[in-house]
Length: 254
Ligand code: ADP
Image 1 (cartoon, rainbow, N blue to C red):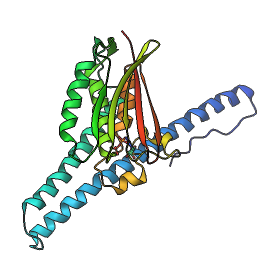
Image 2 (cartoon, rainbow, N blue to C red):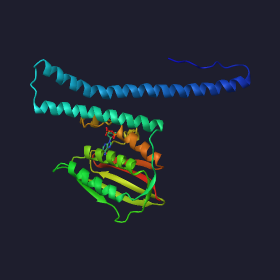
Image 3 (cartoon, rainbow, N blue to C red):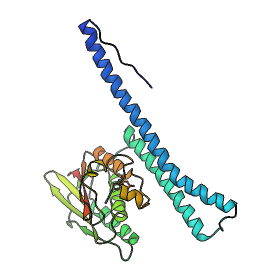
Image 4 (tube, protein in one colour):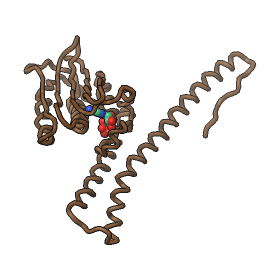
């Protein structure tokens, strides 16, 4: 535990110095506390799939359960989850340290949107939501990093698929002043008003998403916001519990 506070002095100049030193110390303590919190959260997230994998392996070793395709599928699923967590954590730490190279170009995002719709349509269940694209056929160019933008859309669409049982997921595109916006609109479980301010925080997940064992990590939106901000854009969310959510991000027009 660090306590680096300076006592106040009778000499006014020293008091000023002492006060700014104390402010610096307090902000470092904040950074340190956040670092501890992140490591705590990370450990917790990694432990869950590890416990499941270890459990199966020990039961297999002791002959308590028999090897079957189903057991291997579950082991593979938990391993994939671990892999996703580690990848997400790596992206997160790079993004937060400012190490993500961003390659801004003049791009037309329509082909990307079309290919994403195709890819995600394949993932949708027959009785699940439909995926729609509402995009002008001629889209103005934006200044963006196409790979980073794809990463954000994959996150938003992945969430929409994960948290929507029926209805629709719509990608809508429009312009506003000197910006292009892309919205991912779902008719899913929605987010409670008191939770909305937290969705972009790292490791934050609504209780109902934790309960669903939906395979989420609570990192995707944190990375997405960072990636949009690195491109000079903004991302926002509107949602109503039980009705659906809209995640919208803005990028500068070229
Ligand atoms: P996760 O990997 O858990 O989805 P995210 O950072 O992408 O992590 O999202 C954080 C949390 O925000 C989710 O766990 C979920 O509770 C909520 N959330 C995100 N997107 C949606 C959505 N489209 N509908 C409802 N809840 C959502």
